[in-house]
Length: 464
Ligand SMILES: [Zn+2]
Image (cartoon, rainbow, N blue to C red):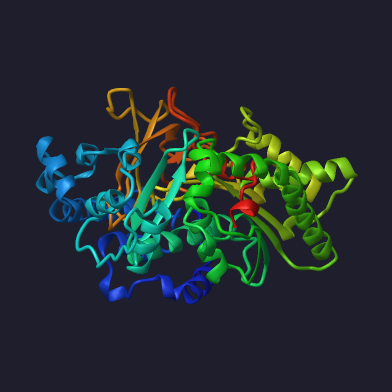
């Protein structure tokens, strides 16, 4: 049985106190997140107890306080009283990930968001007559609702509204998941390089979700993309300019992209050079393709570093490095070892998506994606949306009780293989096989894809 270093967790909890609700006010999902000593080290039985209680309560909450989800369940003749034990969990009606992509424009978009939200809606004030997505998102932000989004290759967005509590719990959960798997590396005064947009300058999910790194988890954080990233910017980058002005903008942008990206890569290498001779710990967090760009430059210039155990890499957001090419993670880890000297067991991937507050994190021993099973319930479905057995491939779905402001009972377009436990390490609970792909017929979404395209057609300069 693996255990977790309690001094590590205690220190994290001190630093993340602002994200945590008061202990006497925990929902069952929060109890499942904050009470057990480890996110990944609980026994299967104990985790199942926490998880069942959390999901039953969350289902009742959305059933009773969300009109559209209530109607959706009524049509399927399923209510809270039908969900009693673990076997019943797969009866909970699941929303398609496409549901969160099916939004109207302008003021109607604000109404659409309001209808998704479970419970009382705060006062939202929108002054524009024809508000853009970004303006609606700002209005919600002022009322305490973080609307995060990601985008697929078709330029269609997925929008998810999180109230303060859901957002804070998600931030805590990602920090805790990452730190438990990188326990040997983590130290508060380490140096980190965020290979995503600045969390305070975007609502793009991959950027936003790492706020916690800036706020509390690590003291010295550099950011690769330190400028505003909006839905307009992402939409044009994904090849959907609207009107002549935007088409001109995207044309001009391509010209400046190369130089911008060269600067980004040079900054990363300069940062590495500055820290090489110290005894400080360094970590990269974010899109693998950006670190890959830096390593390609190092290869051309005959450069390499030897950070050893002082270094860590935690990737997320997808594995496309070129237009249609995925990089196998094994190849990436070998490259990281060769150019940075960082060992495989400190080069991990994290899998999540804008719709979920569960963070599947690779174990250092086997690189299987461990599910935070105290609260998060994974399902794998066949083409008729029926659950398949462990070991079979299918569509990933989940029951996420940390989602308080929207129903977190969702099936995705990702293809996964779920195993009952990790074939390599001692941690109990289910894991996903390391390589997650898209189901046939689904657009490519890896959250890093929109960033990759944004950097290729760098729009930031002309849109500022
Ligand atoms: Zn494992």
